[in-house]
Length: 189
Image 1 (tube, rainbow, N blue to C red):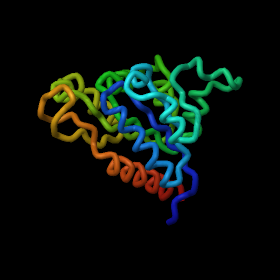
Image 2 (image 1 turned 180 degrees about the vertical axis):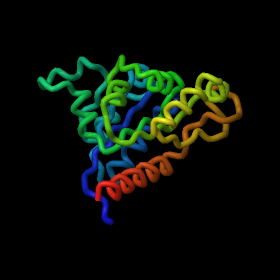
Image 3 (image 1 turned 45 degrees about the vertical axis):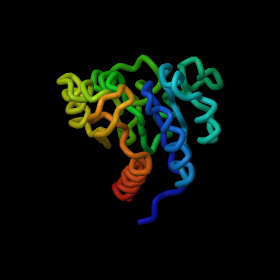
């Protein structure tokens, strides 16, 4: 079956050094023909600017609930409804914990609570954080709810340690996103 054109991918970006790779990911998703809407946590803006991701996605970037003044309809709910896929790359240990516990204190977490689209998380963090029992439990909780994960992978980490915690390869994240969108099309057909 042929995949629908112009699928909406909400690309969440969190406060990890790997946030700079979101630029390449947004560009790849746009080249695949998707409408990409970037939602950044406040901490993500310390690593990469919203302007960079706005230029690459060709859409406004959401960083705060206060970005939503253009309409009577809450922007985070509009994005949650529009989403064919919520892809969060990088996903920090903090964001994973927020999602596992149903917290919605910023637009990205609120979108995750409100969307009925598939969710794909690409974790990136220090290996000790990834292997912590709380993170493992949060990942298991989200997995039981149907959230999918890609990565992390092992390698040299930004903190200087060698180990697991690196963001998965961007082209493979984009490929997995394509797979999930195609799978969703097949379920709808």
